[in-house]
Image (cartoon, rainbow, N blue to C red; front, side, top):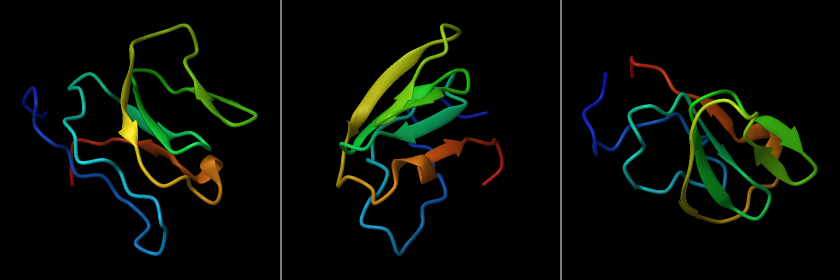
Length: 85
């Protein structure tokens, strides 16, 4: 388990123009996702997909992490966080 405020490394496609912002990811986060406009979010529960991004499923917490270059396909930007890296 990570410590509060620790930056958690996550897998990112090195060929993509989008990168995960280097900000602390909440300890409770189980998923991070990027919307079509480039905004990254942390989710406690797996988010639902909408037309241009992701939204909470009325369960768990959500937090905006920042914004980077928009992805070519936001649907490829749902990342499940794990405790082993």
